[in-house]
Length: 159
Length: 235
Image (cartoon, rainbow over the protein chains, first blue to last red):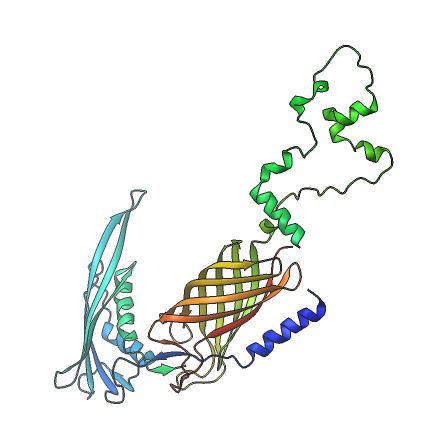
């Protein structure tokens, strides 16, 4: 290709491309109306690690922290005495899955399942569902599945 | 270029052809002088040599050339078909997107009709949104299989189908969007190793949070994603 031909080709590509910008929008409309429900009270029921009964983790506080960081709620609390426009109840169960790998070693995996309900103070269901996740440790399985629940309340965006 | 293409076709379609005798040459089995003989053989006259050359003589220059005439140019067989050196291309591309800067490396490999594209791009937000002030939003990962209906030394046109995945780790490490991607691309080689390309893609199906052709305001725009790039291939 001649030098003039190359320049013409490059110029054509640039000329073609300059006005051809496409809009590409990443969006999340939010699964609930955060203007209608700006605050949430969080309550998590989670099992205690059977291999370490002394280890207590406040998973309500963990989920509240995740929601404060990423959700569309203006206020998230674990204090039942504070008024909230939404009550988020989460029941977590963990299934222990033990398998044997090709070398004969026992491998334990923890499968977390979280059923959640977002209710009005009067008890009306606003949003409900179930999330699952699998991890290497008992505590991680609970945290990971709570992360999935928190994602369902991610703040709306259009970027 | 036409010559090399024909040579390539010849090498691919009839690889054994180079070993076959050309018209006018005799097969070794037909040559009486090929069998060893203990008795001294008198040197045959030139006329007989021209009609029945020995195998040794067949590999030597023709008699005409010994007489001082210029030997006819013989096209030496290529060691490797040129395409085998050129089935890989590394590049960099820039997506033309409103309010965002998307750029990153590309890689494609294949041969003649069938190619595989892989790409990744960083996605920067250049126009701040309410939920995101700007900066690195995430990365795009794309992979596609493509057919090349037109494939010459200088121009390659490709039609592909694949998936584009957007990992929005700038917002949250677990946020992904995905789309089925159909694409057409044109690759123009400016030299043996350097080329430019343009790719056009549409998303016939995408996850709910990925909107190609829709502005933040909700206003509709062009649903075609164009990218331009530079490519390099081993010479």
